View 1 (tube, rainbow, N blue to C red):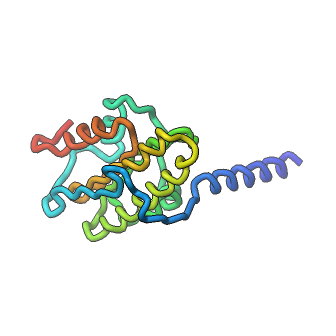
View 2 (cartoon, helix red, strand yellow; view 1 turned 180 degrees about the vertical axis):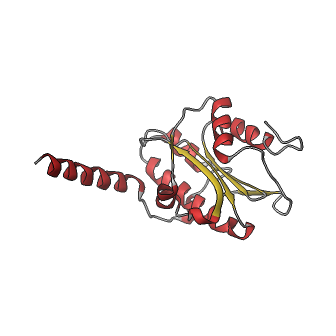
View 3 (tube, helix red, strand yellow; view 1 turned 120 degrees about the vertical axis):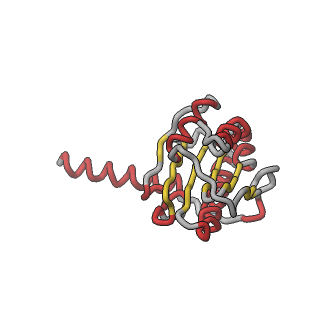
Length: 183
């Protein structure tokens, strides 16, 4: 009897979690924020490297900007939330809230091949639309953050930020690629 109850509880939790993050509406024209959907390609043809891993970069960015720590996505949840195949990536780290109380989200993707950058950017834009839809009728401030997301490509790295501290986090991120190697 106990095993059946545990199984039923597991199924219910899986359904609830699936319903929370699987919004598939794709209203492409809704990004009205000043940075929304604005892909800022920089140094795409140059070799750009950081001495830090994606995880180390995000840890430093969130620490310096005073952002709370969130859950990290693994390869399976990456595919679910971003529709990005981890096989395209050399490295990645995504941090998002455990509950839908905040729209804050930060992700760094390092693609193996520059030809896959548009695929990663498309996944990010879909994710941004989902977050916007989630907060459109809930919290106005969180919706504004989601509309004004940051998408920045630097070499084979793609950065995605939804946060009120976007400028601070971007500045820290940029420091990882300075000529002296950053942090």
